[in-house]
Image (cartoon, rainbow, N blue to C red; front, side, top):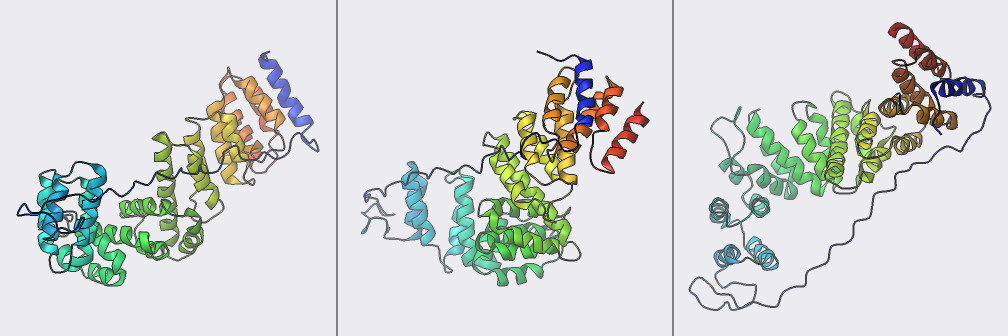
Length: 399
C-alpha cells in the first residue's frame, strides 16, 4: 500500500523520536559479490606437423623449422589462414628474429602490415621482439622530423616496450637523453608498458616523476597493464607513491583513477561490475584514492543496479566523508515525489546504517522541492555534526 505524503512525513518524526538506542538491523554487508573467476580458456592442441614448402618450392626438412629461416616462416605466416596455424608460424617467425637480421624483419613487418598480411595485434607482437634486438637503433628509426611536436612513427612505442622489458635500465637511460617533447613522451609510454609487465613495482615507483595531467595517457596505459595482473599487490606500492613529496600523491590518485576507469569500461562493455567494486574496496582508505572516487563508483553502479543494492555496497564501508557523499548521491538519484515513500521506508529501517547521514542528506535535498517541511524534519535526524547543520543551512537558504 502506498503511503501518502503525510505518512512519510510522519516517518521523519518517528525517525527522530526513536533515533537513540534503537537497534534495527545488523550492519549491512556488501551486496556485491567478489570478482568472478574467469573460466580457463580451452588449450588448443598442437597441430600435427605440416608439409610446408620453402622459397624454392621444396619440402621443409623438419616440421616447424623452415629450411631458409626467417623468410620462409614469414611467407608461411602471410599465406596461412587457419588461426591455430597462424599462431604456430608467428611463433616460428619470432624465434628467427636476431640482432643480425632485425632490420630486414622490421622492413618486412612494415610492408606486411601495409598489405594487410598481418593484423595490428600481430604487428605489435613483432615490434616488441624487434625492440629486444634492435634497441636504440630501432627506436631511432621511429624518430619524427620534429621531436618536440611530432610523435614516434612505425609503432616505436611497442618496440620500446619490448626493449624495456628486457633491459629497463639501458632503455630508460637512452630515453632520458632525448629532447623533451612528444617523441620522448610517446616512447616513455612504451617503457612503462614494458616494465609494468615484468616489474610492476618499478613501474609504479617511476610514475612519481610523471605529470598527472600532461602524462595522463601514460598513466592510463600503466593502469591498464597493472589491472590485468594481480591488483592486490599494488596497494603498498601506490601507498608508497602517494606518500612521496612533489607529484607523488597526485600521480598515485591519477593512476588509481585510471584503474577504476579500466574497470568501468569492462562494466559498460557488458562485463560484471564486480571488478569495479572489488578494485575500489581494495584501496578504500588509501591516500591514492582521490576525493569523490566512491561517489564516482556509485554513480556508475546506479546505471545498472537498484539504489538499494548500491546503498548496501556503500554501507559496507566505515562511516566517513566518502560514504556520506556516495550515499547522498545514490539517494538523490533514487528520490522523486513518486518514490519518496519507498525511500522513507528504507531510511526508517536503516537508522544505524553507516550510510544513514549521507542518505538523509540526499533525501532532504531532493524532497525540499515538493515538501520543504518534511525535508527539514528528516534533516534533523542526521546524527553527525557538522553534517546536520550544513544540510539545515542549505535547506533554509533554498527557501
